Image (spheres, rainbow, N blue to C red):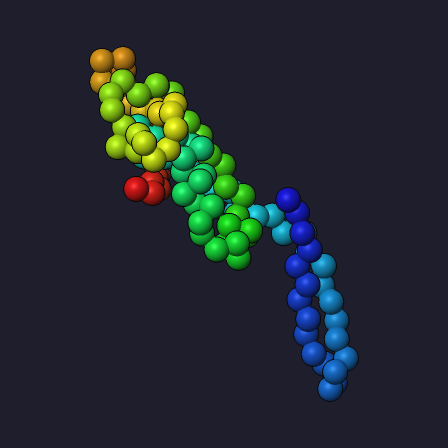
Length: 105
């Protein structure tokens, strides 16, 4: 999870200094799309180059509701499938405020 980043600076024709710094990978929350799952998104992202995924701490979450309808990925990926929102099960007591959100479709 943690690694060392070595920064080399040249001084006086080849004399080098090394600086050790503990470096944390950026943690990214990965939210799946409609009627899929965190596991499905993880499989999709596994196709990304290792030099990208290896630099990130990717966290995959499943939505809170089991899907109540047909998923577009049936026959491609196995269930269970999840939904982030079901209008008949959510009450609106306060407005939802988000500073930002990322979703990969």
